[in-house]
Amino acid sequence: MSILMTLRQCLGRRGMMAGFGLFLLMSNASVVHAHPLPVPEGKVMLTVEGDVSRTNGDGVARFDRAMLQALPQGTIVTHTPWTEGASRFEGPLLGAIYDAVGAHGDSLRVVALNDFAADVPLPEAKEYGVILAMQRDGEPMPVREYGPLFVLYPFDDHPELQTEEVRFRSVWQVARIVVE
Image 1 (tube, rainbow, N blue to C red):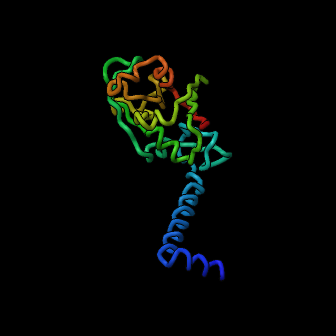
Image 2: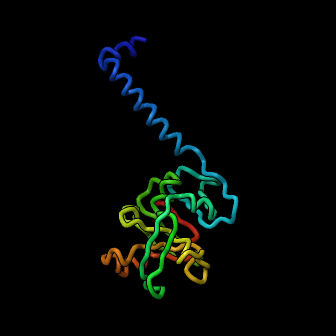
């Protein structure tokens, strides 16, 4: 009781209430990230592993199409080095996937179905609104056409992205992401 009285004398009633409010806010933020992700009901399209705090089994986060579509989405209309003409690509923001799994690293190692891999720096992904495209021109992307998931940068909007290094990071046929 004497510790509370001393804190109250030092901080006053308003200081105590502000401190308590901050405590509740911080503890609530921790609880949000502590809740596990829902279990996928459909076919798993993406597995996220590594430095993540929200999972739905065996220390990994698995996402089906509906779970990916429930995340904040982005749309990019752009030409790519691999497709003809400009196309409209849609899918979850890479930053939203990072947030959904309670990730703590600063790099996303994106791995394709054939085990090709590239590292996407998180600050770059957030700055440019990089998406994990699931649709091209309103249609789901099949494996033979860079799907089902394709890391896509807004090439037309940012000419500085039209480099070999960034093209290398534009992994298609994505199967998993490792947060490092």
